[in-house]
Image (cartoon, rainbow, N blue to C red):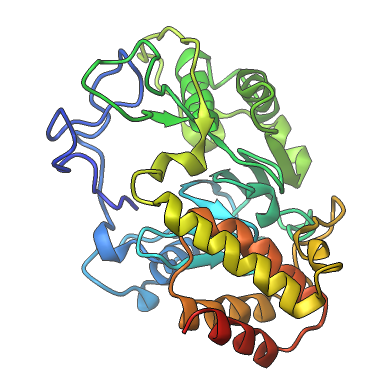
Length: 344
């Protein structure tokens, strides 16, 4: 799955080439592209994960994961996210509950795979698994961030990067595990050892988390990623980092951000009153899911977007507010009324 909007982008100073390291080579040429553009969507991702070709739509390759009880599966997901959601390039959300239910269905009592490892790069990625991912479906998940913080971009301007680039070249967590995989013997290194190295590399910028069946972390990385002894060792550079949410600053104007701030401040006050409005932004205890009723959260998001338009990348942080609206037992029609009065 690759949206494929970088190599041929008119803003790319090296047309047809993608790099993710200041001194790195092209990581685009020869990479399989089974699903691109509008085919990168929630339905196709779920269908591919489940191995269900009948659910696929569009013009993709039709490839799916046809794993069985003796197979190890590795999934890497990277996009913008927010409380309880992973983003899709087309603006859709993959909700945490939907992803976990898909993994449960895939496991099917052990028939779908022997073990599955999933690495997730997004802001507030801990909300995807915290309090949701069972420990008895042979899934081990690590995330770039906990439930309340940004993940960070890496190899940003002012690093030792090619001067023609004016953007970050990667994500800190992703850069860390990929470069670790390139510089260690994956037949010897365990998933747990890789996790600790990634945590050390990420430092205090964000907290790399682990969820699910932690016993799987003792297994060797090569069982999930394979290994290539011919990999050249690369120099691990010092990084200048910035919150991932800032990567789209040119597209999310300050005026729109201020408007979204204003709307959700008013929603908080309207629904619970000014004194209680702060409660809507409060997090939940570790081990608790973001929201008790995920269907309610989907409905609240739809209601808001129907009246106010799609949430921006910046505005997705306010899904925590909408989750708190659900946890407070506020009916959808009340939320709809608030949104209609704010966005007319």
